[in-house]
Length: 401
Image (cartoon, rainbow, N blue to C red; front, side, top):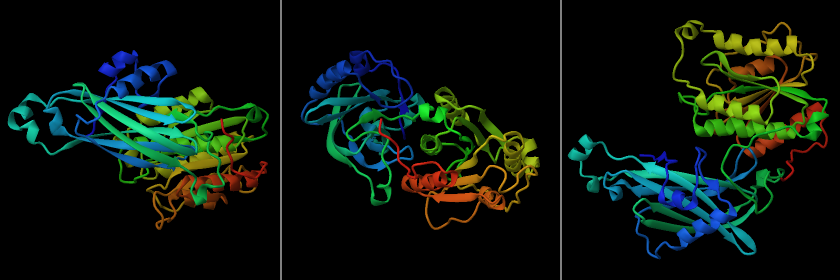
């Protein structure tokens, strides 16, 4: 059983006067950090809430940030079938640096009356589970987690997380400076001054599909991969104009189109991906068995015929479940004359990198396929595309901010 997030007032939220939004743990202001710190320090030395924590080893995500996370599990029986609210406080205290404190709240629903009459909640073996995460730059972070329920029972866990680049990531420079901390959220790209004067104009064709080909839903980690990878791609490719088209092959349709992407429309893209329901497909779509192929060819045709200023056409997404061969069936597209096509194709695991239909189409149009399994490979492949386009310097680095 997983917990539902609750943004209703808990004891801690009342102390801090917080109005939480659906974004997970938030970094508290210095004033609220002091208040929440007093709540943490009031916890008894011996745990009164029976829970356990599994820290998640820090890893570099596709936005080139280190994610530091944890999973909390509590026996369902300790709540005796009653509704409960859990507050999670994560504090980072380092010598010579003000403490940083993150807060999240979660709700456990009550057992339905009929079920509670048949089952003794005290004998249930199930667990409730929730997770939290923050993002950071390189460094070593002493972490202290306090979980408190609505009955003022406490659980405490401490550990140290070390965020460091792996050997195959050392050509990258993380977005956050060493020692920097931030709340967990999708980064939102916006053009800078260098992009405004750039001669490049790119189109990104985003394959809004789940990483697991058997999944019927675009889950949080699917959206995170798409948005984080797009963010990194756009930060590395200075472009005066970015056009983004998100599409879904199963539904044979575009789900989002933006002619000039900016910070605000990036947020709209995130919302469009969040609202995408893949389990429902219209009868008309089912009858058009080759509709997905027509969609792909139509995207290339539109870019070649109506957008002569485009510098590059970039497919980005997970390895697609469709693997039928495709010709470059876009009359307006002329390899060598039309904008070059690139495909950043993500594989969740190594050893099964057979071509999908987008790869077949890219190869048929004399484009270039970049297969990737990790953020490090994403950085290397972006560097290769920069070299192809003549963008200097020929490196894949992100300036800290």
